[in-house]
Image (cartoon, rainbow, N blue to C red; front, side):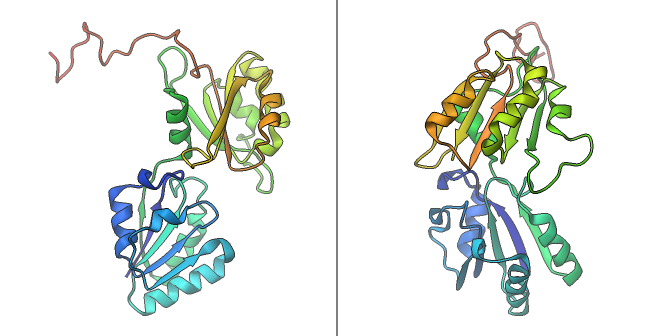
Length: 248
């Protein structure tokens, strides 16, 4: 018996991996994060038990898994995006290790990747930014020392900020000294869902645009000079004068 932590992707049912889809369709027990994973992701399943974990606390989820383990049933534990990022799987894995229950993590498409695709952007451009920082706004869960938003912003790298749209003004105040008022920024609401929407602007004017849209949750903030920039060098990889093992 194995518990499969499956990344269902950002919302579009077609953005799940082939392996993830196969496991959902074959596991006799499915526990899915119904507040973030659309039911369409479960299409074609033949599970004996399907449970929406949005209605459960951690101990109840573990009890379901223990029961499945006792019955010899594999479990498809379906999370949104990629489960290794803000998926709260660490606490579940800790219990599974204590119980001696096998598990496997199946990666998924991240919200950051989905937003970049929607915006038609490459997040790592030569001479502009070669790093992407994925972080969150410190609200109910504090950030470890050195990971405060202002500290991360000092790098000037492309940044994806989760769980922060309700604190946008505070976030902008921390970003401003490091990125500048004219730095491009985008706020994407429910990327790849049927009701997806987004706004693009600068640190100086994005707050007003978001207020007009009324985004309150399930939105990702992307900031960095890579957004909309065409002032960057070409990569070495495809440069005609650059030789490598496949192109002497």
